[in-house]
Amino acid sequence: MVPAFFFSKSHETTMSGSTNRNTRINSLIVFADIIISCLIFVVLHKLTFGFWELTKDDVIILLSSIILWSYLLKRFDLSKIYKTNPHSYILRNYVSAMLLGLLGLVFITFILKIQPRRFFLIEFVTIGFAAFYLFIVMIYHIAQHQRARGLHTSNIFIIGDKNIGSIIHKIETNTYWGYRIKGIITEDSEVAEKYNRYPIYSIDNIKEKLLEEPIDEVFYCLSTLDNKMISNLVYLCLELGITFRVSSQILSLTSTKAQIYYVGEMPFFTFQNTPRQNLNMLCKNIFDKVASGFAIIVLSPVFILTAIAIKIDSKGPVFFTQKRSGLRGREFTLYKFRSMCDHAEEMKDTLLAENEQDGPVFKIKDDKRITRVGRFIRKFSIDETPQFFNVLKGDMSIVGPRPPLPSEVKEYKPWQTRKLSMKPGLTCIWQVSGRNQIPFEQWMKLDLQYIDTWSLGLDFMILLKTIKVVLKHDGQ
Image (cartoon, rainbow, N blue to C red; front, side):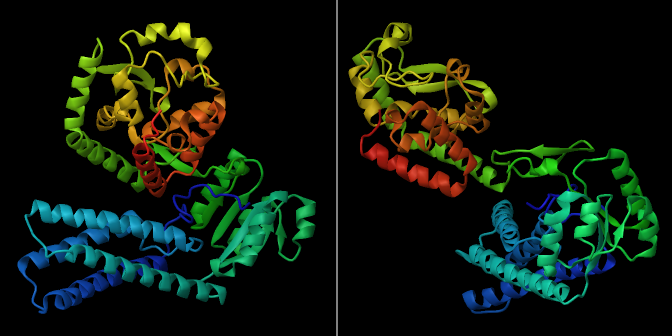
C-alpha cells in the first residue's frame, strides 16, 4: 500500500505555493474553458434557434455561466493539473461542478424572471461538461506524456526506513508522475544496500545536500513521526522554497481514507468510514425533503381514511408515538398509525416468551395485540407512512437503517452501534430482503453493508425494491 501523504486536500496539494509555470497553466485553463463556454453557447444558440444574435436574456445567461463556472473551477480545483490524480477523480469533480452549475443557472433565471427556451440550459451545460472534461483529460495526457519523456519533472529526496519500498516502486513504475529520485536519506543499512542505485545520504547532511542539489520536493516516509525532526525539516524546506510531504503508517492502519479537517486554524487528521457530507449527501437530503413533502400531500386522503378506520375499529389514539434512536444515538419521537390495541406496550412483558426474533428486538408474526385495521394497514405498510413527517423534520431519511429503540441500542455489541452513524430511514436493505426471516446479526450486517456501500444509485434501487414489496403486500 502506498502511504498517504499529509497536508493533502486532494491527491497532490502541497505546502509550498504553485510555481509560476503552474500558475500560468492554471490561468490558461480557466481562460480556455471560458472561451469554450462562449463558443458552445453561441453555436448551440444558432443551431437551436437559427440565428446568431443574442437577446438581452441570452447575454445575462452567458455572463452568469462564465462567472459561475469560473467560481466552480476554483472551488473544485478543476483548473489545476495534478500529477497523480486518476481520471475518476477528475470526472467526479466535473460532474459535481456541472450539477451545481446547472442548479445555479436555474436559480439565476428564476430570480431574474428569465425564461430560457425549453431544454436549452440542460443542453448547454451537458455539452459544455463533455467539452470541458475532454479538454482537461487531453491536457492531462499531454502533461503526463511530457513528464514520461523527462520534461517538467520534479527532483525528490526520500527520507525513510524499511517501509519506503512501496513508494519507490510506485514512483519507478509510474514515470508519468514526473518524480525523479535524486537521493535516499536513511540511517538503515539494509535500505542503503537495497537501494544503492540511488545516492544514499545521512539525515545529518540533508541541509547541505538540499543546498547542493536542485531538489523540488522532500518525502518524509519514516515509520515513526518525529515531531522535532519534522518541524526542522518543514522550516528548512520552506526557507529554501522546497515542497515537503509527510507520510505516516497511521494512515494505513485501516482501509478508511483519512482527510484533513480544520477546527479554526488547527488541522486534524480525520478517519471516517461513513458517507461524507458531500454533494451526494446534499442531493440525498434535498430528495428527502421534496419527496416526503410530496408524499404527505399525495397520501393525505389515505391518512384521513386510515384515521377514521382506526377510530371506528378500536379505542385509543390514531397515532402511536415512540422514542427511537437516530443519528449518533440522538433520540427522537417516531410517528406511526396505531395498529395495536391501546395498551399494547404494557402487554409486551407478558409476551416476551413468544418473541420470534433473536437479539434485543421483539417481533411476533401473529401478535394478538394487532387490531383488524392494524393488520390491514401493516400488510400494505400504511402504518409506516406518518414517518414521512419524521423525514420532513430531518429526524429520518427515506432510505436508511431502521431506527431502533434506545433499550435495544443498550444491548448492541460495539460493532453494531455503527448502525447509528447514518440517519435512520423508512426502508433499507433489510426491508427488501426478507424482514423478520433474517436473523438479528445478519440484519445488522445488512445495515452496515448499506453504510459502507452507500450511493444515490443504491438508494434508488432500494426504493424500487421497496415499491415492489409493498405492491406484493409483503409488509409484516
